[in-house]
Length: 255
Length: 249
Image 1: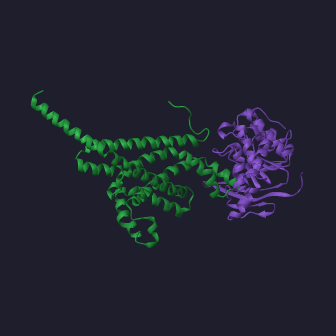
Image 2: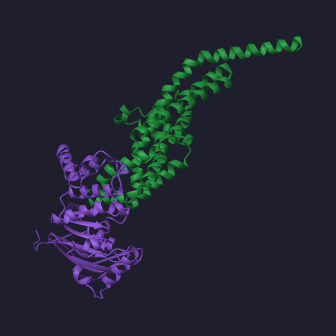
């Protein structure tokens, strides 16, 4: 499953928001089947970086490549091509409130991939089953728990057959008892060889799955390395200090 | 009571009675105006909806010139009194347009058409503000998620934004219905035979404006009540799970 094909390459991305330099020249490369984890304090630019990758926030400078194709942010065609290959999971789910769980997963299959309704419905049901929600297909977002909503949003992204998934703090808006079910789905994805970049504060969980930790601060990646390296006992990495602080607050640090 | 005052009272009662009888006789004629009134409102609501939605979308998502243009439209039609517009359109713009053979089938010279156009154009300005508010009340994540799935903005607006925004607009839209209902009475100035103009013409011959005004008021009241009831039913029918409170006070 792991091979050396580069799925996503980001070069020197700079982004200003509200007069502030939020991203200050960020570069990274993701190979097929790998999971990169972005960690760092809030305001470090993790979420902005993820949104620059699929041009929800167009970068001011820098380049994004998907499978060696350079994305031209001015070309509508390029953006639609890119976004069909890059799945995104948001912190607050962003399910479409007027559609049932099944319709949430199905709508882009019909409207973007132009699948016929029946095939799209079947595909949507498959993806819901994959995240364990086949029996909730007829419920509206307001009738689902946070964990269920996030799992529907994972199914919605998966249905598009993305090459790479961007996960923007997928468990940060969840009640603690609901985090586990979402993490289990993410673990399944990683096991199935999905290429992913995930921003998260779940250090313990991600250190067992991540190929690389990228520690961000003030719009830059200031440390990178395997979880084992960065979190080694006695390590004086910036990552270690941050994680120690996190665990002081939450009382848990795995890995 | 003296004999004189009793007689006077009796005569007064006679007058009242004959007035009421005359009004009663005019009832079918005045009720016939309900169809015209309804035609005006439904036509104007429809014109307002068809123009109001793109105006709202233009104001929220349009490029700067589109936003400017939409705002100018809204400002203009909210600013000019309907009465002035009725004269302008009926005797001016539409009369001119109807002189073209090619447009003959539209019957632009009819007073009814003019009234629907004027009420509809004005309503579009107001309706666009209802829709704009609803669009802007949606979380920005809705559009982001749609874009992230590869939808064009057009697809996202048609399938994700508007279905939600229009549902949220129904309460404000009900308000627009009752306002239009009353504005439609202004159409009498160009001779549309709706409820108000029939009431006025009967009153002019019977010299009994009071009972007739009460009657007209009652008709408008019933129309308001029925329309709002219908919209309430629609609202309940298309309501999104979790977006309105169940039960009532």
